[in-house]
Image (cartoon, rainbow, N blue to C red):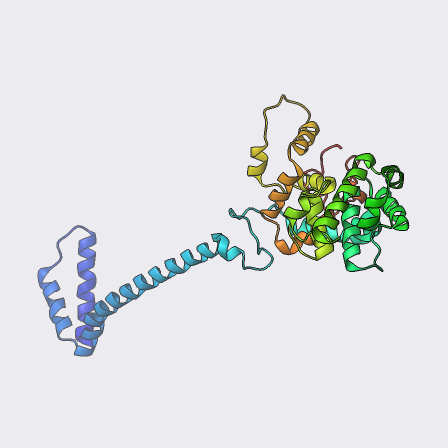
Length: 349
């Protein structure tokens, strides 16, 4: 014990001399070495050799652990950014290639669902899927759904529903439409928008259905769009309502307007349609932007990010929302549940 205390005192003395800039006493330092060497072998092995080995081993382990942690981090980032993985996770099953989604879109959609439940819209009781005779054969029902869609263009649901009632009483089958004179058919359709032109479309389309499809309607978008008076919007809705096939989103005037008000169009799509214009009021700019995007532009834009399991409901949902809350002029923004998160809520319509 005495030798140990002596070595500690000598060691402290050497440190003190070094701090003061003096040379340490050589004899004292030698004495310290001697005293250390005279210590039991147990203490020497613990303080010198084992400590060095331990340091080397921990350094290797720490390096290997560090490499592993970096690898895991990279894998996590790949999962977040990979579009292939995004397609298989939860609701985001049809993510766009660049992974863009509108801010708060799920919250906005849930709020619209809530508002739609509280207020009945004309489309709920007089929409195109409510105009056909449900007691007749499936083939005739599909035909009547197609006719109601042809009448719905530029026409309110109430007017379309009333005209479909008159047609059903007259006998709404392909054979009877071909046999009906133009004058009689015009009277049955009036006051549907463009009723004279639609009279021609219905008669020609009915004849094609009889000649090529045995009175039934086609079961593909391409063949439906070949019929006179049938465009992509009608074709997509018809595929869903008649054949229960989700082929795309039907974009009518309400879907066209609301999608842009909510900021649901990807920025690159807006940039493609951006044109140089003179400065003006913000409201006028917004309305001009709406007019420049075609319904097909909006459809492609929505389908680029909206999960496919929502395509079948979004048309009906937004049409009713546009009829009751988000109207073309004078929308009820302050009573809308999306007022605080809608990018167009502060605009004057």
